[in-house]
Length: 164
Ligand code: ADP
Image 1 (cartoon, helix red, strand yellow):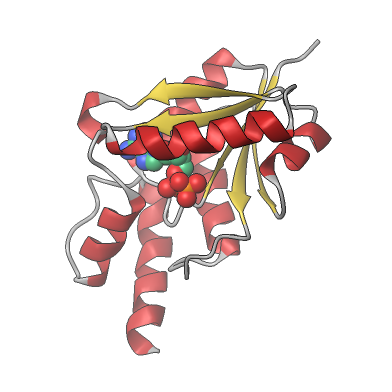
Image 2: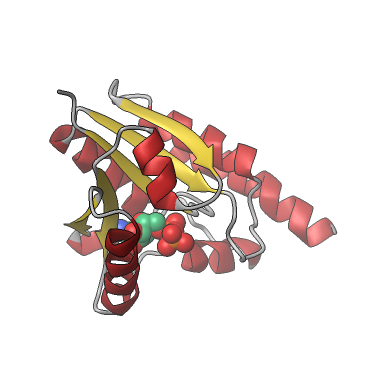
């Protein structure tokens, strides 16, 4: 039986921290589905298509990783895909409360799907999409924070936001 995992997130934009989790998850599971959540209440900087494009480029080296978007309950989506695991990344303490709560709720909703947490790497422990967005919107250099394919897409999105 193939062991399938879903790695869900907003990925607005994908960062080096996300890319690292994708690489590590690809070594732990037979198949990894990187899933861009569509029903976030946040107003995104990147469109869903831009995030899909960036994540597809990032995931290219890993033959067992696919990229999709999803709507609705994550556990329903995971079950649909035959995934028994939800992968999430953990940074400094701040992530724990939130992730713990979501994991508990997800287990209540669907006991068959378990959450698996991968600790961030030292160098990415303070890296978040929101930091990248803030720096990029102020025209700062984010080239050490995001994978190369994200840079061009992010530039377009920033120009669009500043225009409108
Ligand atoms: P969400 O809105 O679902 O939290 P994010 O795109 O912010 O979506 O994050 C998706 C997942 O990636 C989360 O589990 C988050 O903790 C993890 N993550 C984000 N940044 C990093 C990082 N620098 N290192 C490791 N994991 C990270």
